[in-house]
Image 1 (cartoon, protein in one colour):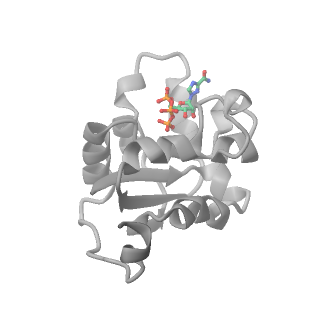
Image 2 (spheres, protein in one colour):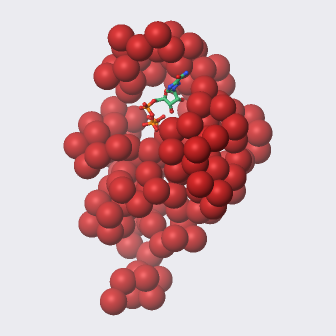
Length: 148
Ligand code: RTP
């Protein structure tokens, strides 16, 4: 089983989309292993997006992520990282397919409402960064109805 880190960004929270976004992952069959609403320090945002620090939009991105509370989430399940990204859609919402979260709920790349880890290694790094306290052990009773 894989774990992935998903963050509902400040615009997703401000627009009242938390339950709609979470629902996509839970309805698919993924298991919640961590969930919290939090304000993001500049240091955490900069560390999370450190691979983009040379990009011209980096300053604006960090400001955006720190502009209001986010919801930090860890989901577990088969291929959670790649499927999480598929459910979220392309980085630019204008080319995200309808049916994806970004394709259905947003328009601009700088306001794309949700983040999902892009590899198993990134997921491990991000989970450690956002959930230093660890995850919640949880095996839902519905598991045999999701996996054969
Ligand atoms: P994320 O990390 O947020 O899940 O996004 P991603 O992998 O799909 O895309 P990435 O290239 O890692 O970019 C991270 C976030 O930076 C913002 N961005 N703005 N103004 C721009 O051209 C631009 N490009 C990227 C987006 O919020 C993107 O999700």
